[in-house]
Length: 130
Length: 425
Image 1 (cartoon, chains in turn yellow, brown):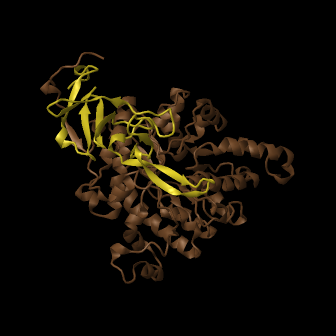
Image 2 (cartoon, rainbow over the protein chains, first blue to last red; image 1 turned 135 degrees about the vertical axis):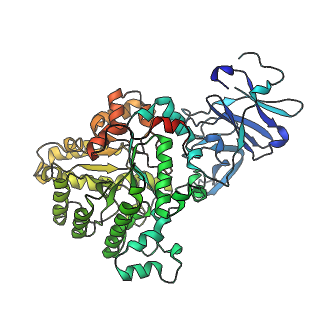
Image 3 (cartoon, one colour; image 1 turned 180 degrees about the horizontal axis):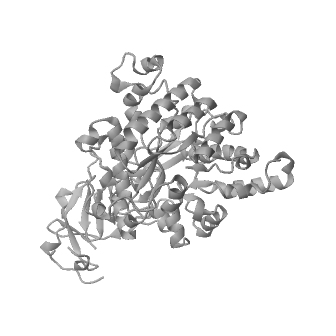
């Protein structure tokens, strides 16, 4: 496919929803690069597979909960734990963490992943939108 | 957004793959580095990586066969299968298992899964060279200076004869087996710095070996660089025109660092502090004046420590020049004549901070691109290429030409762009 063959808004086939159980990270080749589709918590998320930091294959990285600090009321540290409501997508090049739900960096607003819309048809066919 | 078709056009069925955590291939991990290189035409530009790493521990069973002392060789292999040759008697260890950010940086835990071709898998040294080759080709690096890993703390070994023995075995193994296996590989050989005479002998023996472009002192050690015992070593390096590098590292056994509980803390401070000590001694004791023809390179400390140290030393020197009788000008002016590797290049939100740092250290002629690959905080060449305040000439200098001038490397790219774009094997 040539770059010019795909206009913005074009749908690219990903697979059938049944092929994408939680934990699946499917990398779809498109002209000019790749889009990663990540199945987590019953949802599908899609981002350009190029990290906003140095360009690493961010969609191939670990999905893991945000690390939280637990303190007592008088501010003594008790320990750390994983958030169950804030999954992070971690770029495997440098470990930079992004909010899986939005693609924003967990800490640095200068870095944000390029998000793609995921379309699931009634028959279960899944596409991403360029 | 334009109108989307209700039914997908079958011609738009893209190819896909599912992420497989049970395999590993440098070419897949660094595929985006290759894309970056092609987008910037880096394949037609000289790129020299002045600091990359291999894992000598993965080839330890081969390295110990070069130990010349039969007692030490026995220690390395006694009662064990050669493939289990132990490193722990030789290489000081520490709690450092957090390099990989608890598995978040995938190459640490998966690198052992990588398969090379048969020739490259035939020996540990060939595998070492083969893995470096793949990384170089993906990042469009023409020449790469390889440094070891755990050996960076060998200077803390309580028996200096061990440091000497390992340094010699490593030098022979690297120059006889690894460097000749790929035309892009170079080394600044590890000096057993706790033994000044042995360091001098190592320089004399290996300075002309293929691929040896300089020598390296690891920064975690407690013998000051201005000790008179080192003057013959510096004179020999100066006479031979071989640069001396100081590779930063940290060690938790240093009592100053015992309070630093997190890896982020000790890595941030340790990799700068250890080089600060040596650079301060180097300047204050007038070594640039005593050896004006000896080039020194400060490796893997980033750049932000330099504006601090330049200002601090200049300020104190103006008041305390009586303590620095050899210096005829401000400390920062000597620092501006030294060389620095770029990684880990800081990322200030206000880029004028980085631009000022570049001006302060004469980056256009003194800064050397380095990747530090495959370590967790590596920098791809595009980090330098994309800096908006660099002229095209400054960019070319930092990415390769400064290193070519310093180390006597060719100034033309070595890798063939057609091969690189045709799919790296």
